[in-house]
Amino acid sequence: MTSTTRIARPFQGGAYLLAVAAITGALSGCAPLIVGGAAVGAMVTFDRRTSGAQLEDEAIELRGASRLRDALGERAHININSYNRQVLLTGEVGNDAAKQTAEQIVSRVDNVRGIVNELAVMPSTTLSQRSADTLVTGKVKASIIDDRNLSISAFKVVTERGTVYLMGRVTQPEADRATQLARTVSGVQRVVRIFEIISDEEMRRLTPRSGAAPAPAPSPAAAPGLSPATPAPRP
Image 1 (cartoon, rainbow, N blue to C red):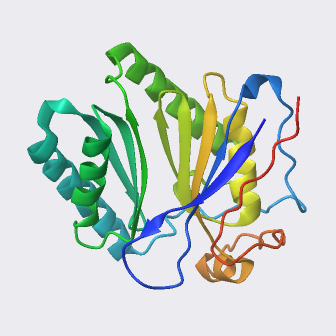
Image 2: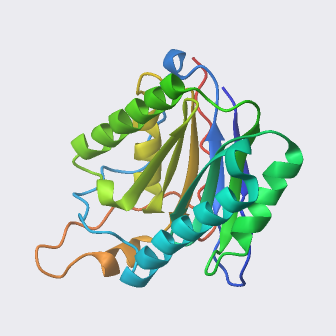
Image 3: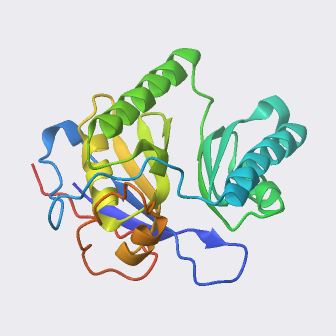
């Protein structure tokens, strides 16, 4: 099993770094990832984005989808998801020119920081394929909800043609644990991580003062804001 890391193309200045770790291969036949550090305490159950960022994400998705429809119409099947102003494009387009056009259109939407362009040049998926993806998304979300060390509100889950995209503002142990869980869900062929990694100190600041959850375990050393690819052990 192999893994790769790519950095999303930013559209505004700043030190924010976004990593996309794609863990590929026949997942069902491989051993699960090992989560570094001790178990993470119960996580908070609120959205870790500011209220302003949440509203901006909704606006980005609505405006981006409208502009893509106007420009490409029925010639493309494109899904747009934004988390903390980082945009994920998934779906299918007819050619490379349409793929680049879609990215350029979304890059001009207000408040977009960066784009991960995962559009595939191929025929659009069928309704049955999209239904299967919806089912996979539901199962991945359920596995996160069932894990007492994770908060589903910290994650956004998107599935396209069996590939699961995980977005969110999370600590390194949370990122690794969610990836491990997603890899064990039936129907998942690949896991792509699009995380903003936050420090333990920032996590403590996000935790409510009353009824605060225990601080997460120390995360492995990594570049600030970077979600590194985790090599998966061979089957």
